[in-house]
Length: 371
Image (cartoon, rainbow, N blue to C red; front, side, top):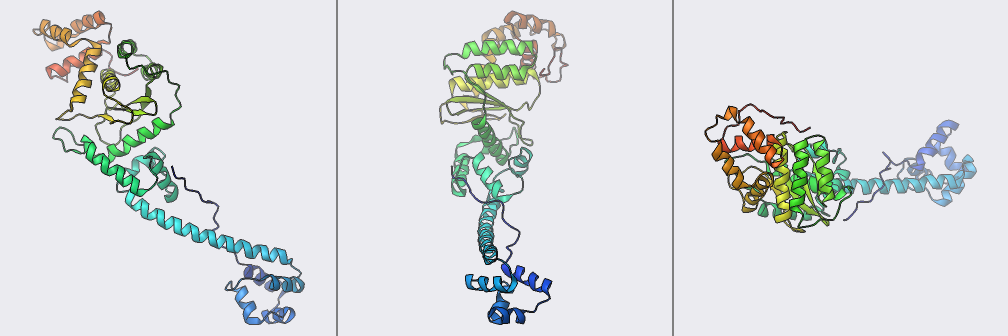
């Protein structure tokens, strides 16, 4: 990636050697005409130097050295520094102007408040442009706009939905911020085995059932199976539960805790695990878990994977059939027995039960917080 290289130590203004000569004349109570007479430098020329309109030449510096007892080398050093500082100021203005033009386009395409909140941007427009380009892995504005156009073409979250309200700019910003975090994550990962899905889901169910230090234990287990794990808060009101994608040689799973309950957390993790083992490909499509009225086939398959990872669908149907005459408010003992039978967290089954019968306001009978 192209790196911006510039000296941040740019002076507020360049100091001309004429300022030094002017101060010396004032300190000595000497007039320009007198200095002109002593040095032989024509008065108009000397006046232009003092006003900063003309550069000091080596010949003038030697004459001033004799008249004022100031080193000619020192005077020429000030003159040279002035020219360098003037060049830096000019370069800085050009760069600042260019980056401001870029920023005025970028800020309409991303969620600037989110990037400020997470520390990507800080108000220095040159650094902000560079960091946004880093987040989106692009070299310039044209590449960024090309990426955005491709995102609109390929991503279903740009489609209007009757079920949920999404802000494509927010999702676009969050998605690439997560990819940026994944690229910079230093977690130690095991080897990813495409055939290890059953073993991993078994281990995850143990973690979810115990529900102690759950997020950290989930991260360690996923890392052990070669899957990077990120816990990143959602952006704004966008209903993102999770996301999965390939980054380098390993898949990455991201969860938001949009609904901070163990059953939602477990389902989101298992849903993304389903994507990892069944749908993800290197340099392939990113899978984002957003409630929608028209699910893709991949999202439907990931849902089924998550449900079957807890209890087989056929067995769950039998359970619902056996308990169809049980009043929902008295279902807890049956849920508990079924959970013990399969060695899973009862709240996960209880959450599934509420979803299936369409009653979400039943009082929780089990611990539903992520501990």
